Length: 370
Image (tube, rainbow, N blue to C red; front, side):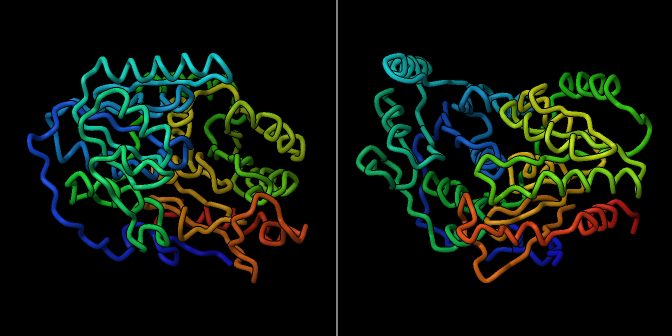
């Protein structure tokens, strides 16, 4: 079953969120810190909320606190004034890392802190840093540390996740968030580097090039089989005379190598050669994307390139790709969506029943002029 974008409840198709009581911050904030979420896909889905904050206070200094490995997501975002990367080590070193994070936040004298994650620790950091106004969802026993408290309305929990963070920022008085405001900014130096890298590694220059992300951090219940991806690569080569670049995190390189070995046509492997900013640039150069429910999928959809998403254990109505050219391939079985890392029945039929030809048909249809 191919669920086209209009069949999935895309963010802009959801019912409007209920308006909370109007909050007006007085004085308006001049230095805002947003603690970003911790997964790449969530970062993309939180962009509408972050952009809403920017529009609400266009003259304020807007900073983002984000894990070091995700920081390059914002390399091209000139509307962000500052990106503060951080990392927390294990054991005793982690104690000093946390002290350093709190110290960095304190030194910048923010007057509004907005927490996208629901963790106790994120609230503790901005409280210890002395930020006077602190906004976030009441969760993880941190309610006493928040001065601007929010609770997600039911539609933000059951509908597309993009509305989850939009509901949260309304606690700060930001009421004009738009679920379709998710465009990703490409850093031009990254694009130039990836254009050179791609040209140096291509076997069939001048032909279409498609990106495939065969891995998913959550587990095998989100991953279409490697042999199926191998067959997909060969089908794209036969039908479209196309080349494939396999993308993903450095930890996913082994999966990409397995997929390339499962094909006769072979593929370029980019996993491990790019940071997130360069991955964004690389995807922007591709003619289309096919992959699992993953951070790469969310980037591709938000970039506006033809994106075909394979869903297994997760719910496309909740975390489907955002963008004007997206399709979801999804077998909704009696047990779907189970949201599990592994199939409790051991058959993974929600994934194995999907055929490579369905994916190629879907992406070719999106690329064809109408």
